[in-house]
Image 1: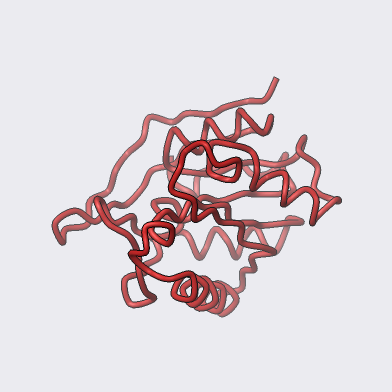
Image 2: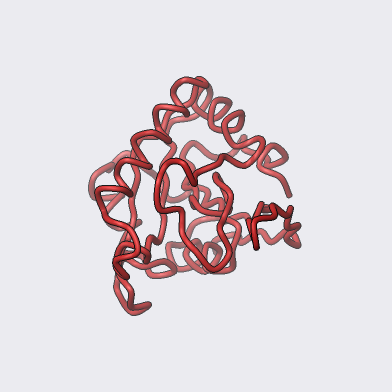
Length: 178
């Protein structure tokens, strides 16, 4: 399922994964600087559409490359600032970016664990989990949605492997909270 095909009407808050959902995922590597960042077709249009008619848009992302010292947190913040500038220039908006730089999968903030969502709820008490949708390209994103007891939808992705971009169609997986 492409971003532009998601039924958004019952939600007012959206959590987006970053790599592979909003921007091209570098297989076996990391987006280390702005020059390596490329939006996936349709991502900017979707963020613009949601900003015009919905309450909140957040990004929740694992960024292990910082923890591995492959790129710095300063570079990550620079990427995020420039990404948000582009999103705003296209009529969209992101209300917050939550990321985890931990290497260990046991870190409470590393998806699929719930720490990033708990932090978001603490900082944005008007966010209602009942009307929140997680959008991501991986099973980790869907596990995160399940662990947070929110709906989730797995979308298609664009991956960069050996210098070649490839469209990756995911079997549409929708996780519905209980």
